[in-house]
Image 1 (cartoon, rainbow, N blue to C red):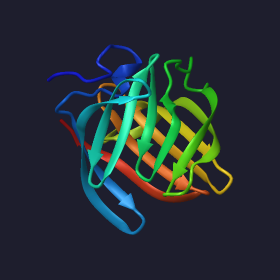
Image 2: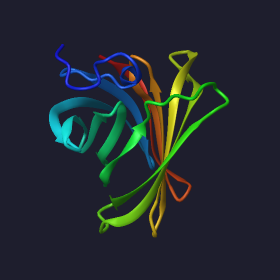
Image 3: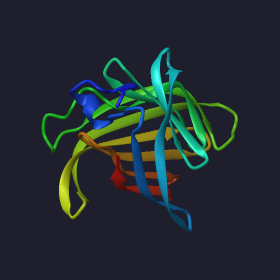
Image 4: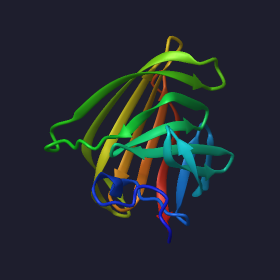
Length: 184
């Protein structure tokens, strides 16, 4: 498999991507539940570097590894400018500690006009169930505050696999959740 981004050892191993990478998720979106496959669609310029675009159903997401941090530019229903780090190179020293960063950006969410937003990311270790046992993940919580709403995105990354769980909330209400079924 040819590698697009994130092929080096280290933090990049928590979000591996190759030209043929796929992830199949159980998705809960409101009252709808379905199985959805996400694929690496193409390499694309993101934040002035070689990034990737993932495609799952009608939604596309754009990521880039830059300065050993994973940045998110475009996601289902939104866009960040500049892209925001959602996986930091600096890891917590223990399970009881967390690493925190804050950013300012412009956010387009749900088709609304771009708004100034503050973004806070907290990264910690979390043990969650996966395939019948508990696994150690890196859990990234991104909170995006705009004048109109607060969006929280909690993502669990498993080394060598990628995203195994993700939940998105708006103003505290669960919008969508996904859990990894398989990867190839």
